[in-house]
Image (tube, rainbow, N blue to C red; front, side, top):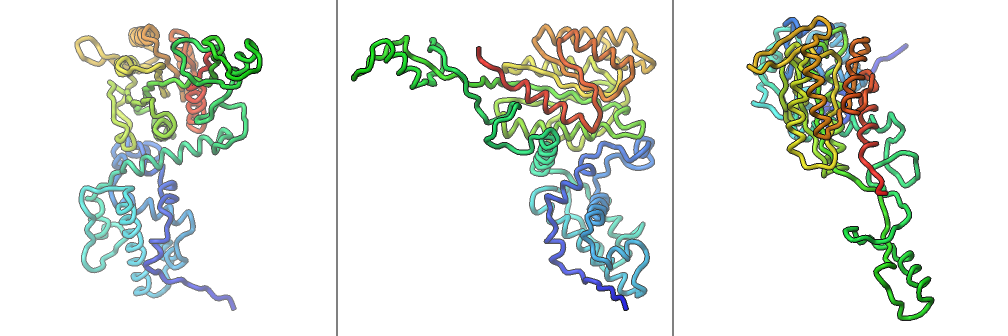
Length: 428
């Protein structure tokens, strides 16, 4: 005879959940951009970017089910089969709700989330998980926000995944054909010149003196004997990440904005930990354009509708001109053609039908202004329409930048490799 063993819930179960692993599983939910599959959210059927405690509990529940961390009893009740004992089913449902509350409380206590007000659970027990339940109604009124700690963690996990996908999952001491941070490449020394850092190559310096005077003590050193070691010159860079947040970024059955946000978080973590002298700013462009703080990026949503590329480039150029860095660059992620233009009187002219010559010429003028200011523009295009390909190639030709035609799966790899390649220059 076959036996089925049911494990009773214990309060320690929620405490044993690995919060970092759970956050990693919840990454897409926490960084959602108003995309709910198809056109949900866009037409108002569901709220865009639901950040209520009710939605958070549901996302945690889905993650636990997918990872197999729920007891068989809990899964049976969730599937609607039940155990045949109404009182027992109600008890299991209550235990499940308490476990979810405890996990949320741990996320708050350990600094991954914060809320405007503490969630209040109703007294007694009345249909905790079902539609219209008191716990669900109370949870809708409490909104959660990501903390700097959770945003930094999500950036770290994305960066680690991107490094692993290009074959560099960790740093070591073995030689590779790649450039990497924190590893100084040696090269031949050179005679010291006024203004050089006095990184003295002692053997070469002594060799020059011995060749001139022969072996003897004391050894007379002259100015011409001095040799200094050369190393890789690590320049500072100011980067503006331009993210297209027009509605095309979540239409056509694909969310393109959330992967772009993940790349931004990964770049932020990379710059903060490996290139502290660099700066990264984020500009969203749609009908207009505005800069947002990095901490607000995780909650950024798509919209309004059109793509004002010229206004985004103008704002990015103003930001970069105020930065005193060796390199200034714009990384532009988009999936559509320029379809909006801010007129001198402040009105926004829009035309979504093809490439409007007026909008196109204004965009090219801004690209030329960036080139005159010494600003590189690297464009990452997420679409492959012939007209868009021609537009991106023209932008690259004007500013002598690069054009990448990629998709959401490879976007992060291309951006990371391009950023790392441009970080090191050899002193001749």
